[in-house]
Length: 197
Image 1 (cartoon, rainbow, N blue to C red):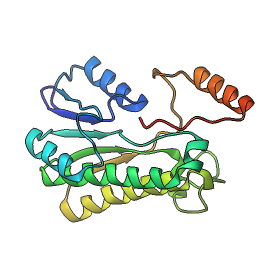
Image 2 (spheres, rainbow, N blue to C red):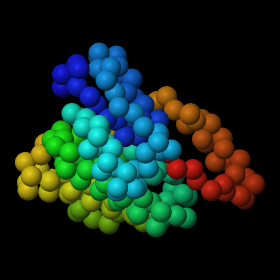
Image 3 (cartoon, rainbow, N blue to C red):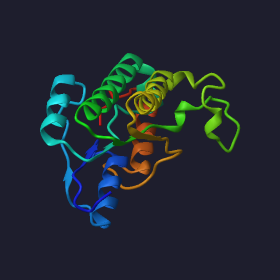
Image 4 (cartoon, rainbow, N blue to C red):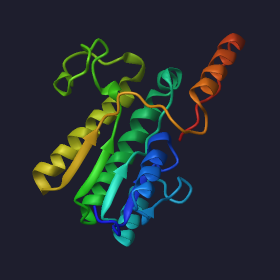
């Protein structure tokens, strides 16, 4: 990437997206294209296509997703599969149509089987059943990987997919705060509705 490249980071307010932004800035990449969910709803195909057509970033980091814990995934499976499929489909396709040939799609290690041998190897993908509580999220992420591969084969793009194994770092709520809230909710026998990131 050139230092003056226009770089779009989808999901720049999340844990992964904010880390990408910090790293890019630390390495002299200052032309970051950032939009909040209120500014650009990535589930809206028309809005996403218009955004890419007007802005034409050189590179895209796709870190945006509907995320949540085990309980949220279990309670709202349709929301997780629908919104994640829409986000990644809209961004990948609009990026292609705008002529962007470099995109990094970020997923999750939950794409691997529940009882996957350790350490996880790439070839273990689709070799066994997924964890049932987050299967809709995992299937959406698997579809995103296949979409990147398919666009590469058909359109000669250079889209990559990376699946971070575990995430920790700076975010709005630390792991300790999330654990404290989960324990409090568990003790109270009430669970709050998850918030989309």
